Image (cartoon, helix red, strand yellow):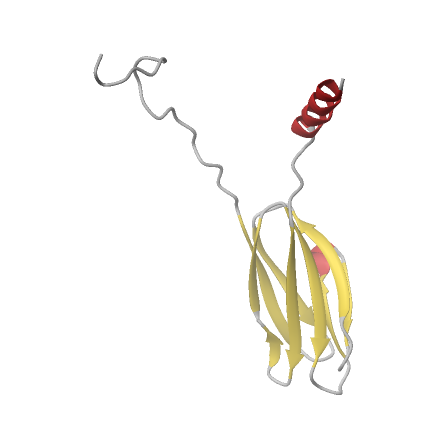
Length: 128
């Protein structure tokens, strides 16, 4: 009975869709602008932004194409999540401080699967 329950739960896990991990990115607003100014993620990834500032003036981080609007205050961290499901470049900026940067979304390549070798499907020792 225990084996049956184990096999049932294992088969349910095998049928479930794989979850993409969340990429966590920290962005700091400085006098010179955003650090880092350019970030890269893979297509289909969930991205969690953490934004803070080192300056007293009010700042923000906006990724308009993905409806991300975040305040960047000195000494405080704000968080937001989004999924980049298309490859390309997406701008982020702050209109009050004129800072800008970009998110580069890389198309994820699936490896081509091929058989390791052609020949007999049964393994035989070399002596035979």
